[in-house]
Image 1 (tube, rainbow, N blue to C red):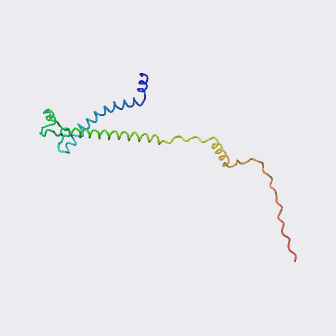
Image 2: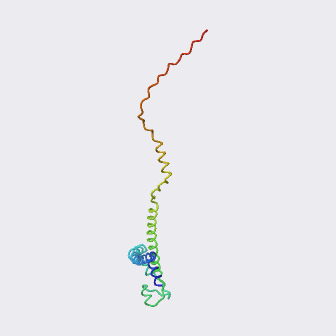
Image 3: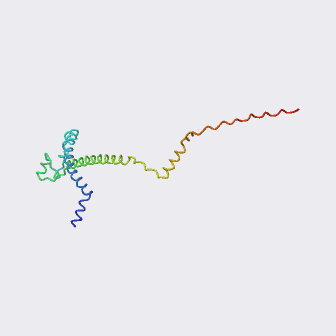
Length: 163
């Protein structure tokens, strides 16, 4: 059983998953800071200072100054503002992961699109190509001795017709 466990852990997929989880945990703190410290104050500014984390409904019907005051009083509360923050966190993480995956896929496509070196043609095609090329070349001039010029006999004139 220990041997099987060792083989399972040593697989590349398990190690990749472990690295992904560790990076994901570190990434979570970055996203929380981005949402809590950067985005939510901007959203709060445009919504007249509403802090989503302080939005709640007290189920006992009373009103409290803050969410903490309602919780100290022991009132049952629905903290929908915290839910809004969680939804915003999720959307940001989903967008970042989408952008990362999109760019990785684009890089993979570029690698796949690189043309492979052309395959060497078969030996018979190479041989036929060489023969064709040799036949297409002009024949070399021969350095043969000049043949003596042959004189032609003058053409006979047709005989005049007798009348």
